[in-house]
Length: 300
Image (cartoon, rainbow, N blue to C red; front, side):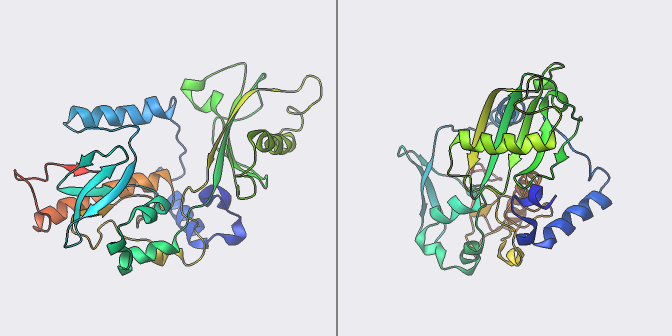
């Protein structure tokens, strides 16, 4: 469970993370319920959000990398500059980048501020996601499973748990390979070899080189060298709130203060908190607006 929560060995993990997770499991009505998308994330998660944003007057830019955050003389954000030279001006600016790239993008004039300096106490942890398609159906269950393997933290048979991958004859395992520090720089073939060695232990009667056992049809390896922040003891004091000392600049991301720690749920909840704090800043007259009665442009 500890590896699944932060992708590091239990001996290195802050027990605050485990206690917080258990508290959510026990106290919230659906705290222990696992849920899966009914298809691939790009079409079932990302595209509906894009559709909602554009329908309500927003724009979504793809294949655009942030090159620089330009500031005014008072330290506030002047505009964002993309890698192709395009400039984006707004009333309010939000960063939802992970903590590591955010630290690289901070303007020099901000880095000495105690709020931003604390970010140096947070560092991303490597993780590897693996998708393996087998030629046979494995004896798994319709749920997310915690693994006893030292390399595989959690896995699920997507042919059972996800409608978009449904297959009654073959299994497709999606696995989290963690801790991944020793493997993040290795080839996909080496990672799959190590994964299969672990799977033969988890499924000794079904996976292996012997005749009649399940064999790999194809696989896909996704490496994330810096993912969620490494939740070692003492990291809580380095996590910032969503409101920064820069009046028109706010933060979102699972590394910011929120109740779900380093997770997709935490990232989503941080966005809600960020939006709430922007609204409060507007009501208190702290945000300088363009024309109109509401912030008419927010750059995220």
